[in-house]
Amino acid sequence: MPPSSSPARRKSAAEEPGAEAAAPAHLAASIAQFLAAHPAAAFLEDGRVLFEMRATRCSVEESHGRCLLQLWSEERNLVRTIVDVKPRAQSLRLVTRKMGATRPQFLELIASSERRTPTTRDTARRNYLRLLERALARHFLGAKIDGLRTAMDLEHSFGPAYVRGRLLQGSAADAVIGVGAAESAAMVDGVLTLGILWLDYCRQHADARHHFSGLKIVVPAGSWRVTAERMTGLNHAAANFELYALDERSEELEPIDFRDLGNLESRLIHAYSPASALERCRAGIDRLLALAPEAARELVDLRIYSGTEVGLLLH
Image (cartoon, rainbow, N blue to C red; front, top):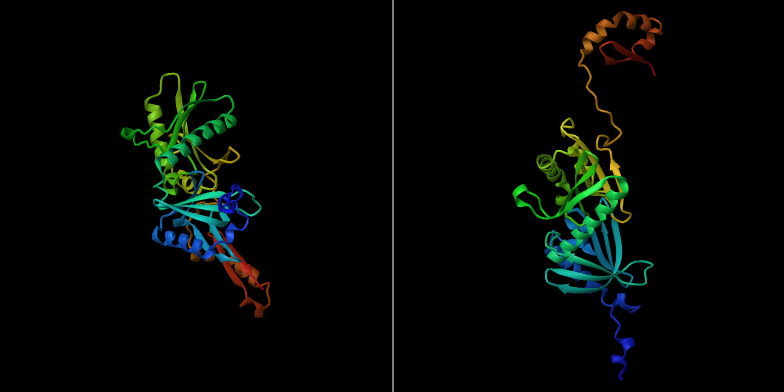
């Protein structure tokens, strides 16, 4: 049998030790051309969106005889050696190698995060539904997770990107809505609107045994800030709103305190007149200035802190 047809020679490019050195400039050019032609492109791994190019920085170039791909955003970063690029309809399949890994990994570069195949989207959403159910069961011990679904309901504006359900504990009940990391950023940021609609739907269709007091929203870890900022403006007398971040790798739910988005304390203070404050404190100011040497009195800095408080600063 000729050497070229032996099993040892029929290994894929991804399995050959030196395959990553094959035409790295050509591999880099193929990826760069695709990205230039599709500004809304996205990188997928196992059907999950890792990076959307509208919010991602990218570098793909030949480096030390390899084609090196670097991606970074506010949420994550990635460095891979590109071993092979396989063109497909409206996408590229990238055979990659991660530092320290012996087996190749695969990335899919698609023209848009909204143009994944229906099979890929449906699989990712079914996997997320099962993952969310497990995470809720572990976090809310004793509660019953009821009716989780992704079925489309256009009459009530519900789409398949959001997992909807109910959390029941005795007569108390909460509406639950979650969105997976495989969805686009726009889908993740729109979860609050659909959550409010879902809470209203649950209340209108509830039986006499259950009272829906609140809404629990679950978003991907690292993607909660927009939703948290929007939740601060809700009418919290109407419902008990709670926000959770789900780490899909560890399957852990983390409560997010959306009322605390920083270390700044906001408060309203009474407006005062600086001139009136100086006049009110004039006697005390003159008494203190008389204690200072005459040459130093012109150096004293008056600071008005409120309508009843004036500070004197020297040096």
